[in-house]
Structure formats: structure tokens, C-alpha cells
Amino acid sequence: MPTSSIPTLTELFLAVRRGQVPPPATIDPALVPRDVAGACAVQDAVGGFLGPIGGWKVGADGPQAEPGAAPIHTATMFTTGATVPPDLCRHLGVEGEIGYRFAHALPARPEGYTRAEVLAAIGTIHPVIEIIDTRFEEPGSQHRLLHMADQQSHGALIVGLGQPAWERVNPAEERVVLTVDDRTVADHVGGNAAGDPLRLLVWLANHASQRGLGMAAGCLVTTGSATGTVFVGHGTDVKASFPSIGQVTAHLA
Image (cartoon, rainbow, N blue to C red; front, top):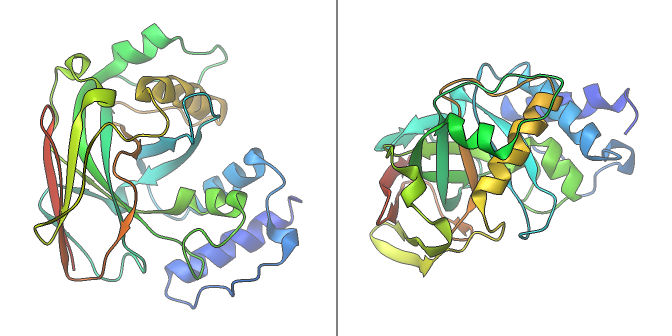
């Protein structure tokens, strides 16, 4: 994507966030980022208008697949039991996820972070609900790099209480139950396509460092859907439960 296209795509995303009508299904091919670096440049440009970074989302399509990531800003982060405002998200794709909060900062630096350094910085593990949204007309309707540029289709993040004994939890063997208005819509063991989420955390620490952002102490990283995405309407109550971690709830006003 030419550098001159970054402001255009940034302005498009910000306009939709301010309430303007999303762009049509057919997007000018010139706006599609040429690569991941171009998509991240748009994330950073939009992020300059969204306020402080409070976390990240990271995921991968398979255990060996290259991950993708996007910063999450404090304006879209909530604690369990919160009501998500009705005008925050146009689409409400609910996902139950596992998150990790870092007790120690991993600032940007020239040398890479080792797995041992990243794991030593983790403080707590959390049950998380992510709301998938898009600044386009429909979720999943565009080139993957356009959705990556659009904050990896992030809408909101609801974070449950943390547990310090995070090493005792094996995400691949952890059961997750997702309910919508007290109706179970997902109930299975594991479910994260990326496999080991700790691999994602190590990758993310180095990705954030290379972008010059790093990760601050208190940063919450959510590691991808363990339930699949369930689209719901406004006025819905949602809950994700993990036996070893706890539960997280939200009302989507």
C-alpha cells in the first residue's frame, strides 16, 4: 500500500467510528495494504486518535501459522459485569477467550525477547469476552489485510477477574461454556485454532517491540477465540465460563 493511502484508509475508519455510513462492499483495490507492515501502519495511525493502549489481541489460524495482532485501546475495554454502550459496536460477534495480564513491562528494545523473559513477565490469567465488529459493511467481507488494518476487527473487550496461578491452566484442556441470554451456544474443551497461546505471547512481545510500542505493565493480551464467533443482537446478556479460570459477563445494551 502506498504511503499516501494510509491517511485515506485511516480517515475512512475514523469516519465510521464517528457514525458515518460504512463504505460499500466493493473497496478500491488501491486501498488494500500491500503487506502486514502496511496494515500495522494503518492500525497505528488510527490508534493515534483512539487514546491509550491497554492491551492487545493476538491470534493465528493454526499452531504453525504466522500470528496477527492489533493494539486494544482502553476506551473499548471493560470489566466483568459491565454494560457495553449500544453505540460502541455495530456488529456484535461474541467470542470466549483466555487473556493474560503482564505484571512487568516488556518495552521496545533492539534485541528480541526470549520465551523465558516473556513468561516471567506474566502476572495473571483471565476469562475474556471479545466483541468482534468491523468498520466495513459486514464482518469478513474484505481482504484479510483490510480487516487487519481495521484493528483486527476488534469491537470491545470484557475482562474477568484474574488468577495468579496461570501456569496451572492448560488452555488446550480447558473447558469453555459460552451462553447468550442463559442459552448455551458453545460448550467444548480447548478450541483455540492457534494451539499454544504462550507461543502467541512470545511472538507478540517481539512484534510490539519491533513496532516501537512494547507492552506496558498491566497490559492485557487476549489470545484468540476458544468458542468461535456467535453474532447476537443488541440487548443481550453474554457469559463465558472456564472452570479453572472463572467467568466473565456483560450486557450488550
